[in-house]
Amino acid sequence: MRRRARRCWVRALLPAVLGFLITPRALAHESPASAITLSAPTPGSYALPPIRQAPDGKVLDESGQPLSLQALFGHKLVVLSFIYTHCADGKGCPLASMTLAQTAKRLAARKALAAQLRFISVSFDPARDTPEVLEDYARHFRPQGFDWRFVAAAPSDMRALLGGYRQDLQREGGELAHNLRVFLIDAQGRIRNEYTSGFLDSKLLGADIETLLLAPAPSTSASPAASTGSGDPRGGYDSNAYASQSRALGARRPEALDLRARLQAGEAGLPALPGPLPTSAQIALGRRLFFDRRLSHNNTLSCASCHVPEQGFTSNELATPVGIEGRTVRRNAPTLLNVGLLPRLFVDSREPRLEQQIWAPLLAANEMGNPSIGYVLEKIAGLKDYAGQFETAFDGQSASMETLGAALAAYERSLIAGDSPFDRWRAGQPEPDFLPAAERGFAIFSGKAACSSCHTLSAHDALFTDHDLHNTGIGYAQAMQTPPARATVTLAPGTRVPVLARDRAVELLQNTQDLGRYEVTQQPADRWRFRTPSLRNVALTAPYMHDGSLPDLAAVIDFYNAGGIANEGLDPRLKPLGLSAAERADLLSFLQSLTGHSVPALVRDAWAAPIGDATRR
Image (tube, rainbow, N blue to C red):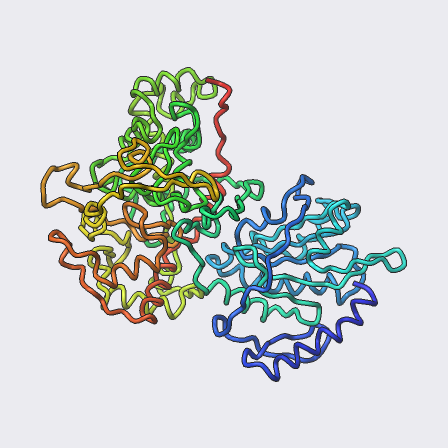
């Protein structure tokens, strides 16, 4: 930033001071070039309405490869700045970087909050700011482990990118000069605040970030996708104005973990894993199989296709997954986080062992579509990249029904995720991410709402499930619906076709009735009873219920507040709760506090998994 930027600083400071004096928000900005010090407002005590959509553009990532800026956002809350490392103006890029570093240092200590956040600094001088130069620049102030990306804009794309963000780039005496601006961008890609050099203060920026993270995430019934996931949200898909917002995989930063060591150490708040621990070789083999699409009949689906790591090891985009060749799957994909701690599996509790569970989706005609166990094993035996791996992991045993199931179970058992803000608070540790609202919500959860009667916890650990089955009325209501004589199917944005109920297409496109536990026992009393899910990491695993019919946690709370859906088998514990709006908000805050600090690390480890070579069949 050169002389022009310094002249603009005075104009930038004046609105900040006037805003503080005359607005109820009491804007709290400390000008870095003045002695004026103002207190930051309390996070959540004010709103930051969207200003405009953040423009997209092309940047060069840390390896020098072109990448969409929107893809780099990764659907996180983003603090975007524009810098160049050789800026000689102490009140420009160096001071801005220092201010951002102060903010990052405070936020890095709050892991649950930091996991939802990304800082991005874009240099517009790629000739001098090579990836090596930017990395050297960052290491002096970037907190260790904090998600702060330093990238550059190619010369051919620089003007358009800076123009979109109203960055007035000039050259003075052969040196670059610009009006420094920093942008706060929400997970939907909307600018929520803009800071100039006289309007950039670490305390205010931190308060603004917390304010946005405290606000409830927007959702739609069609797309309750988590903000940190990958994929393509389907909200508004019925309209011909729909535009894809696919979350690119290019922003992934893989980082392998010692998963067995994590199992040995355990996670706060979780019971010990039952039985002997799997070996590292078994876990590694299971992880590779988990992401291998060749386990499906036509090489198109892997376990991770429905249990997406960055979507809470479930699928946030669909109420129920889509199986092989687009076939309907009638039940919601459950999260695999902490699945190794569950004594019963599937929503009807039909399977007691994780090693055996995998064969159901492998052989289901509407899931992975394999015709037989022998077909799967023969196929794997013919894949050269698995040669010797089963023998190494299982003391000389080759791929078999038992070893394949054991390998996948080994990886799934390693996906333990406790150590949440709630666990730390419960253990008496300082935990800034466990808010007073969450503490009030826990009192409601354990008291007035009586959620803990089914989502149980002990004195020392908690999976928040009684492992039992209950009738909430959702299965009953689905069974009582009368199919329409005609249905409308959306084939593409804005393109719909009518189909008749008697058509085979309707049966394929619509879920059939689900009688729950009755389908296992054939006992009438078991109609529409489904297993109580764990509430661990529940904020990451939308949509909810056995059929994915409730799009977000607010809808779940409203459902139970109303007492479920009346029917003769309704669990007697379900009654109208009479929770006020404030109590429902506190309960939501508590549920959000159950997200484990280690989930982002498990996701990065999943990205590091080797993927099978589909050309070797």
